[in-house]
View 1 (tube, rainbow, N blue to C red):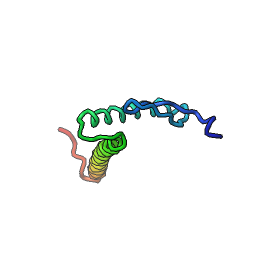
View 2 (tube, rainbow, N blue to C red; view 1 turned 135 degrees about the horizontal axis):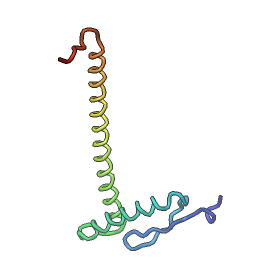
View 3 (cartoon, one colour; view 1 turned 45 degrees about the horizontal axis):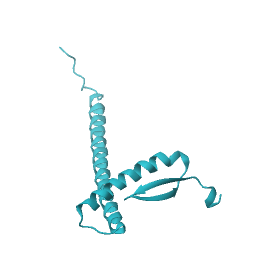
View 4 (cartoon, rainbow, N blue to C red; view 1 turned 180 degrees about the horizontal axis):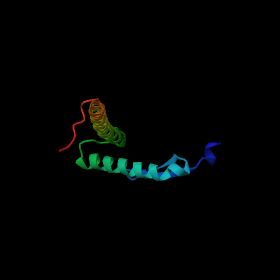
Amino acid sequence: MSDTSRPTTEVTLLGKPYVIACPPEEQEQLKRSARYLDRAMHGIHSRGKVLGAEKIAIMAALNITHELMTALDSHRAGEQSLNDLSERLERALAKAGEPGQNTPLP
């Protein structure tokens, strides 16, 4: 497939349009990601301390990567907590199934 026949979509970052090759089934996600990046870039630009689109893009990428890493760490911690609870439950169920551990209710 040549470059001219590849499906593309246009996104806008800091007011500048970019044409990106993207399969049709991924275009909505690409547009959503571009809107998120554009908001991040505008936030950095509005503070006025970072000049130049390239530096703004780098700062936005670092900020978004930090958000992602924080979310991944939180997700991993949640998974570990669920694993720990599952192990405790399995041990409790195994212990409850041992002879002499079942006490009749009054």
